[in-house]
Image (cartoon, rainbow over all chains, first blue to last red; front, side):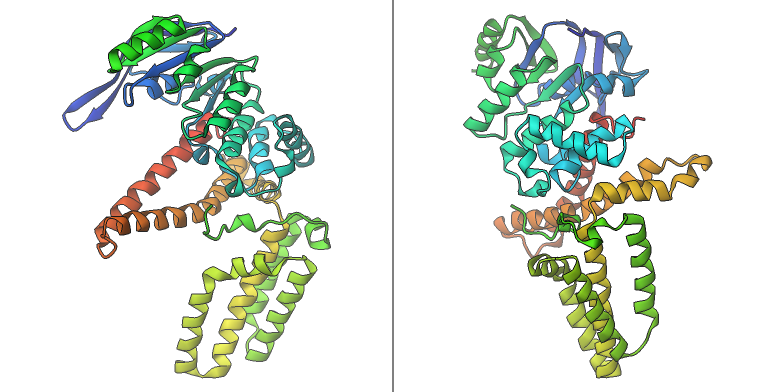
Length: 230
Length: 205
């Protein structure tokens, strides 16, 4: 498994009354295959997730993925770390299904026809190949999220960070997306409000008021979160 | 889902001669035809161009539905423009202007209906290739153009959402309740798209 090292990393934003702390100085080493991140809205979960691929840079401290610093070489980190957003709508940027996958494959510097062939292969692996030339707008919510994940996995990252990937989905789609995520060979960092999903991880972090307040086995973390939330 | 006209969503896969024509050649033809339509004067020639444009549509096997979807956004403009020309300069000029306008849009939509955006991006990237030596990144220029085109339907969607939200609160006559949230949502959407592109590593290399 890859190793993510967060050393004394803090995130601040400038607000009207000076700096606002979004994440207190945090030190973590993440090596387990599946790690859940749970906590209240606005507690800093997404910020922690975005630190991992360099979308957010720490104001102090450092974040390293397999030894690569997100601040020094964000591009290399993002090649290793795939990221799935809550709302697939914002992640899908091309008009048709196959074109969106092809966009991910542009990095491989292969010709147009090969790119298209590979995109169809990727789609087939997720059972989406019959929708290759359909407009992204015409997909259902579950299909959109599946496509977004397929687009990220097409680049073969070592780590997948998913920021509430099932929040907008119904029960059936949640199950199928979750089964897909838990079946991956990649390391999975799963930010979620779905405590059942969190329990399927080897380790879970509870975030509260910009701090990691619990770090341990998933069932205990969920119990701790229930304790502070209600 | 969304009923807004998606400009680039017009693409329909197919195997007609127009589909198989290289996108670069198609862009060039579009360029030449557009200039010809604009330069040649008179209502008769405008009607001829309009009929030729329709022949193109039949050749590309575009369905009537797709054609109407492409034309819907300009119908109001065409009607207003036509009425104005009839009033100011008489029927012949009105016919020329409206027929030219429709011919241009129809020819352009025949292009979008037969060219996948991915192929168009490749062509644009290649066309800008010589600029590489001046430090330009052609891939990035092509992507920026694609995003620009893609964001048009996105903006229309935001506009209609904002209108609905204002209506739900009884504020549909208040320009501030429309414009401020629309501007904010547009910027938010741009940021979300930027984040998504960065997360997918697009523009990193």
